[in-house]
Image (cartoon, rainbow, N blue to C red; front, side):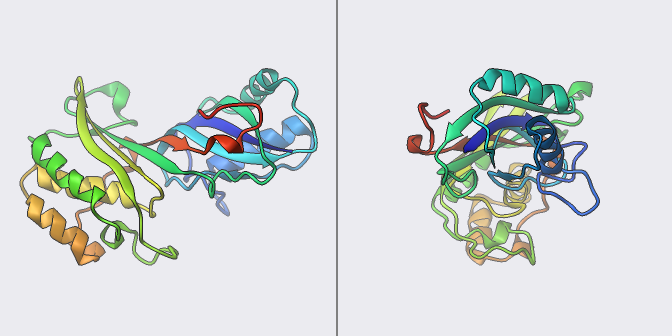
Length: 253
C-alpha cells in the first residue's frame, strides 16, 4: 500500500532533501524514522529536490508498506516523536498504488522571503536586504516569466536536466509587513532555478538591469547572462498540487 506524507522542514542542518553519501539529508532522516516505526526498511520518494539550506513549509513524499495504517493521526504522532525538531509530519494520506509524489505533481510553488530590517528571528529564514528595491519594476520583469518556456538562463550549469522547458503559471512580488515576498508556481523547476530568478530580479529592483534586459536574459538561454543566485535561507517550497484522483477516500490538500 502506498501513502503520501505531508511534511515541513527547516533546511538549515541538511544538505538538501536527497540522500547524500556522507552529509545529512532530510530524506535519509525521514527514512530512518519510518523504518524504525514500521519495523522494516522503508524508502521514500519526494516531490522534488531542495538544495542545501532551502526550507519547505509543505512537502510531499510517498512510501510503501505492507501494513494498513488504520489510524493515520496516531501514526503521525508516533512518527513526529521519532523525527528531530526540524522535521514535522502534518498528514499521512492513502493513495493509489501507482501514485507518485514527483511525477504526479501538477505544479509546485516556491516563495522567497526578503526582510528589509535586521531581525534576529529571521536570520535563517529570510535574506536581509538594505538597498532600495523597485518592487513595481521587479513585478514587470517577473510577468515575463509567464511568457517564457525555456529557462536555460536560470538553470544550474552542467546539471542533468533532460529539458529546460517549464511552464510558469504565477510569478510576482508582494509585501507582508517588513517582508518582501516572491511567489512562483510552475509545472516543474530546474535545479537552482528559483534562486537564479530571484537574484536576477533583485538586479532589476536595484537598477542594475532593466526590464528589457531581463527579457534579453530569458531569450539568451545562457546562465552567464543572469544574475547571481540568491542565498538559500530565504527560499521555501510552499506547495505541491496533485490531481484529486491520486487519493483514496479523500480530497486534495
